[in-house]
Image (cartoon, rainbow, N blue to C red; front, side, top):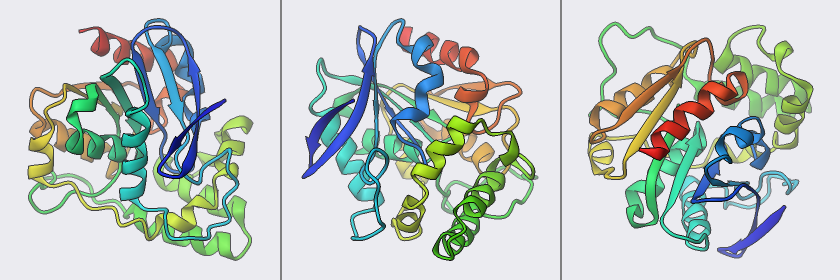
Length: 270
């Protein structure tokens, strides 16, 4: 583990492989370990740099302070990338980390060569309507609020199960490997910050502003808003490419690492 000092905070990261840099940003409840399953495939051609965001493991945050904000995390990733050489870098983000990567590309395209968004999280505003006939699903924000209530009541395990099954479906928590569950437990308190992170919705203008060559990836088995958002964004990001990882859900790189790694490597080589 190494660190870069960014905006007064030591951002921890892991680095493996040689070649052009690929910076990887985890999502909710993740950290630099999120990408373990695809470090092998991705590091064949890249120097893979997997970073932990502010307040995530290896920090054991107590939930205090007011700097768990989307804008702070975006600024931190920008500051982190500014220290990576050679520039520009490839940037990949998953879920909430995909939202962060999207905002980095929007704000500082000069830092990036290519962009990979794996089911980026967030909401679409009225300028980006979902396709007609899209099934309605309970919003993930409500799950987050319920999980925060459970954490404050001392039920960490129940909170994590509630959140995870809101994405992957009822009964999915019991199938999560022990190591992956521990990673989520290590970051459970970060949900306290997320309910007031001030994350803005994606707009049509936001999507049209992305000029970095972009790949959007989805799991073939993902349901709910996370299955819709990346498809809508792909229609409005100039020349965006897409890939679907069959028989995989939101954590597609854990469930199908070889297929995921192949999709990313092919795109980055182009």
